[in-house]
Length: 373
Image 1 (tube, rainbow, N blue to C red):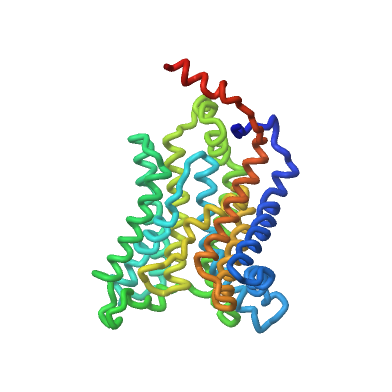
Image 2: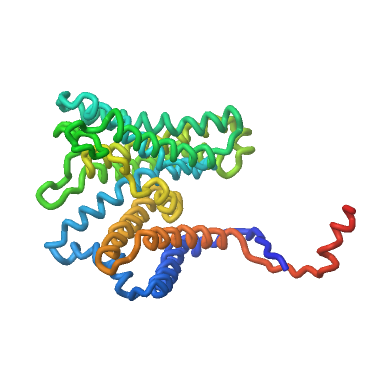
């Protein structure tokens, strides 16, 4: 017996809308089972995941938690919005984590190499350098795909580990703070190189969240209202039809990777100059990979990605709260996030295809082998 996927004649509009919510519900059920198997109270675990971090909505004393949610969600939204352009055009950038890191490194050149340079122009230059760094790093797999027809999934993923090792070497070697008691970190950024907070009196959420919202609006407008957005969708759905329309697949590969890499780089330098304030061996808890979940949970729609980013940001905060409060391991936290991606993809697959079980007799199964013999 074998399993076959048969393409449905048309997609259900109702289930296309409900799919992310069904996936989230299935994740909660599967997560509750996982927590029970780990010996944790599933109700308590889910409370710390999804309720406790939102207590600022009804308790003014906990309003700071909403700021923390904005800090966690901002890089996820920025990266996922860029990835949505790539995925809609049928280009698979899996290396946003590396582009995030390189954006943080390149954007940190001014405050680390020239720490005495203080001016209002420092921060805009840092943000621009972060965008350029992330885009340039994303251009590598784009070039390899268009020039040598390499698989962009593999090349972009492998470059993540190159970026991680580069960051580790830099903060332990040439950029290490000589007054940092031998800790692997750079000097603290000066005031002109720190991304300011939106509402300093109530919390530490910085302008990175504003960048994320603006990027989502701009990308939504581009995809839905411009000729370039039409080109993205046509080449993504039917490359042959795109070629007949005069669209270039090679240029679209570069466009998708440069946009996604640039936004990932902006997220990287925003995180470093905002939430962290210096370069360290680790500047990301896996934002670049989690953003893939955010992109698909948001249905590759930039506005839907904003909501999905807040949900996944909530899972980061809730995971940290669960680790502290009930002793849940970080591996379980990542497994819970992985479940969400699995159910999102499974629900999307079942919207497009139906499952058919085909029974095969032993004699028929052996026929090809006898024929070849």
